Length: 341
Image (cartoon, rainbow, N blue to C red; front, side):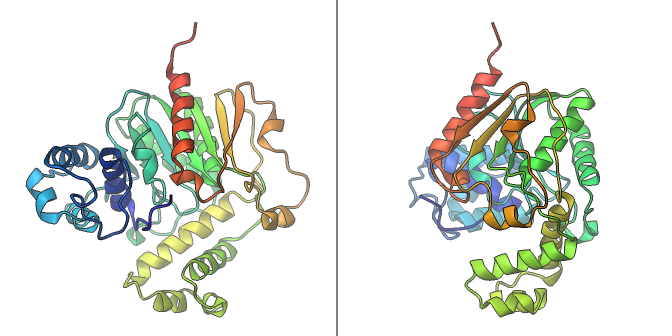
């Protein structure tokens, strides 16, 4: 069952990851009450400790009791600057396996991926955020090599172990693949690359075309008339009525357009690390197939030396909240973590 809320930023994703790890389910809504959702005093203490470990912000048991709701706890962390600095976000700080690094898809961040920070994934989980989500960063690059280089530099400046798993959802798998190749060239050990429904149909798009596509998606998700999206970002934001700052809205729309432009025409080069594809029946979008010129080589056709593919029974949008799929991913990662004979 999909949660009834959509997290808004990296802080929401962080809190949702630990909430679901401790209660077994993500919050049902922004105003979900931790204790009414099954929380006890012991679980509240565990939540406070988990949030401290993941965010670096001092969260007390008393704060959990006082704030109670998902939105209230997240607001307190946000005020203290949790997940607000740098490119790296921690969704879970502890676990038995090698760390998992989530590479962002077209959204540019970890929004939508919080379930990977919760149960049954038993390992530290971190997520990258693209330059440009914060308007103060300036516009993001529309070049794939530059985006990947920025991610690599952020990781090399971090204290993450130099052996890790990478995962990317949708077009994020393309960024993850190129980042894995870059890190391997720099001496990192890539335990595996997990592709979560990543298609190689990448129609050519400019940044502006990608931005218009994002506005259409936002309008459609909000049940706005189609013509609103054609009127531009200001009209869409006004119709949404969410109170989001114009600069922040423009920034995330531009990140989407920049990623769309960066992956246009992508064709993978060979790699020798383990690659695991989790694929739904609707992995390839018919519109992308029609718009992609020339023949496309799919992942199984690349001759990768250590490649396996796993079917997923739900659709593209459900898979990142689908408990059996999360468990299957963790099982694959755990198998790869075990030493060979």
